[in-house]
Length: 201
Image 1 (tube, rainbow, N blue to C red):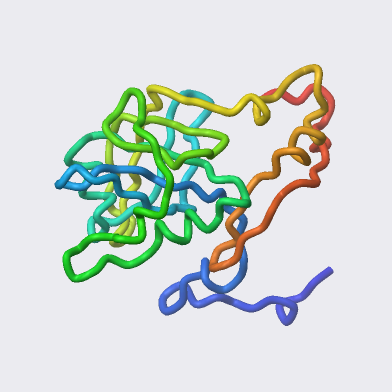
Image 2 (tube, rainbow, N blue to C red):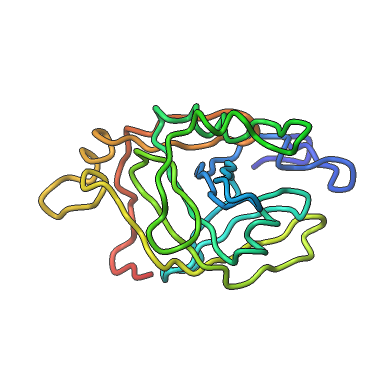
């Protein structure tokens, strides 16, 4: 049995516990449209489905143009980059210049979304197109942006198939994970989770 000396008490007032160790997150690129009509992309790792229905959310702040664009246009896109496109997420995180533009975004290949205003990052294995449902404020200076998924596209190779082993599929099409803060990993080797007999979600 461990004792109190085996643990470090984290300071919840002065420190962010999310900066003190590593946590596994997805890494997505949120697409919105600027006031001048140009596509804007921003990487997000605090992003997740909500439940098992067609809902998706991510964390943002009113200080960011992504937040302002979603609030204005009531929609956004989600691109899931594979590990070999992690550079696209890095470029999307680049700073704005004196004109509040991200000139580096021109290096990101993109194509127009089909059902909402905006674009997606080209050659990603999975895309979501979302209409804004609500924004939930009150998480310090951050807000939860919740969208209803109105369209989704995936490359055939990343879709689960009863005729193919799930482990083989992931090995052939690895997943990108963000290890906050500041690292990433390629997930290619996986194992089935040992659910108890009779488990139901």
